[in-house]
Amino acid sequence: MSIRGPTAFPRENLLSERFKMALRECGKKGDTMTGYVGHIEKQTLANTYFRQVLFTGKHAQLVVMCLQPGEEIGNEVHDSVDQFFRIEQGEAKFVFNGKEEHLAGNGDAVIVPAGTYHNVVNVSNGQLKLYTVYSPPNHPDGTVHKTKAEAEEAEAAEHH
Image 1: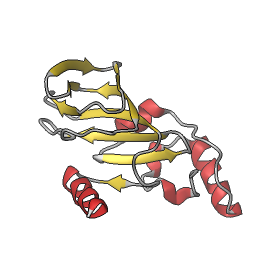
Image 2: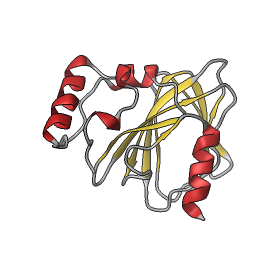
Image 3: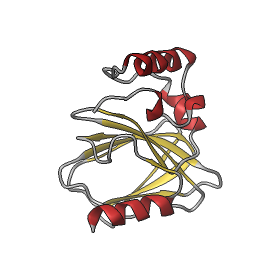
Image 4: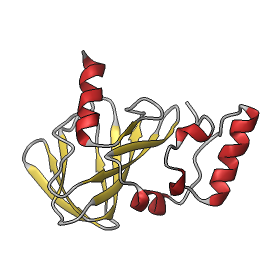
């Protein structure tokens, strides 16, 4: 479940030069990287995709996200997955269990315990940029959804 060569990151411009070199070396040898090393703030701010998995391990998964103004992830629950969010740009409204609301902005962190219905809504005028850590992983390794519509289509296909 580790990073598999340079194809794990279709947007190489998100990566530091040292990390790009390490990915190229792994690709040449056919090895995998043990973990994740990168400037997560820069990668999050550079991301324009709705969802992009950067790393998947046995017990955790790192994902960057970009929500357009007014866009939301949609009310969801992960029965056995805790989720950590960090906002790097914009302002988000987190809604827990359909009624408890919290605003979070640049630099704020939010943890959603397993079994909690939650939604994240971009309430800013610009893009909302965040990263999230799922524990354990929640998406297939290497997942990239350029838009929310693409994500919804993939999730519908997965569950049917």
